[in-house]
Image (cartoon, rainbow, N blue to C red; front, side, top):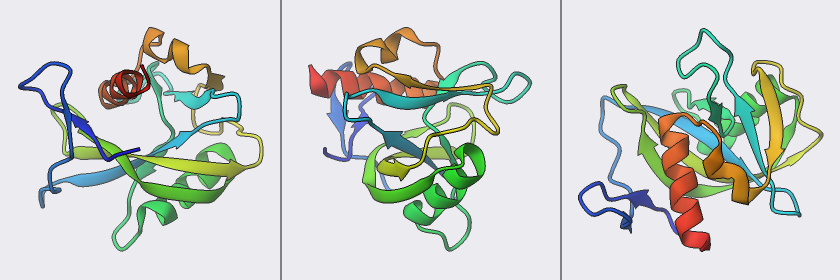
Length: 150
């Protein structure tokens, strides 16, 4: 899959991501698919930014970390799983109004996910992704993914 982002000036158009500005906090989100095509999503706890909304699991990339290292650390902490594979960013989107730039990265895991920091963790069939209330950047990625797969 190509590295893509929506082009806000042309509805439905997708283009490669821009370089990361220096005042940006990078965040990595894991795009994990089962063999049946279902995608792993986590629902953010109430009381946090985007509370109650669904997201692709992940977190902030620490100084000096690669996306793969950040995914390994975050998914071990949040879901008690081991990241066995992580690719390049498939899509990048800014969290509206904040300094976070979220990079969606394809990943494979070992272990059954357990929600340690989320209200709920669930495997979602791809055709149901757009029906869930999602955090804004995650919604943008899910919409781009749906366009590419249709």
